[in-house]
Image (cartoon, rainbow, N blue to C red; front, side):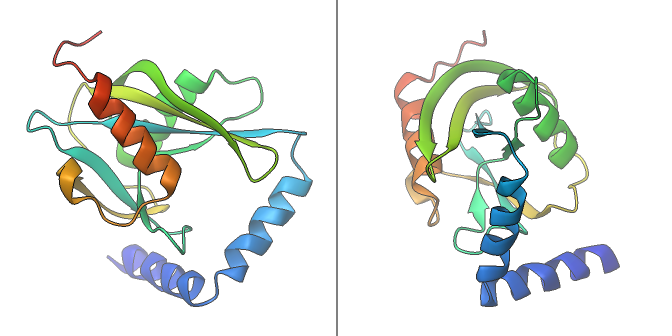
Length: 161
């Protein structure tokens, strides 16, 4: 529990001083290739609820979809699988790309529809919490995450790939 309290403290500091997250992002991007890429997974449970996670390092929209940065030479679909395994110990099957958008000038975001293959395990230090949320009762989300969920709802089928 001490680790969770530490990360809650870090999240509180970042939320009070969001410039810290922006500064870290700028420093990280200076060292990156011309374009960076990130992926998120839209995962539904059997009740039709979407998986949301509370991120430590997202000061303005702490709740959002699980995902992360694409490593150099990594397939984005594999990134989704890896990130959900690392962050939630969750095994998924990756489905189709739902949405792709260039943001922040040189960053590509991609959202994938994902299917559950198990249960959520221990959360990584990057996450404070998770919850299954009815898509009609979403908290304030980054617009890309919101649109990815809406796109998933429009094409979602109960049949797995």
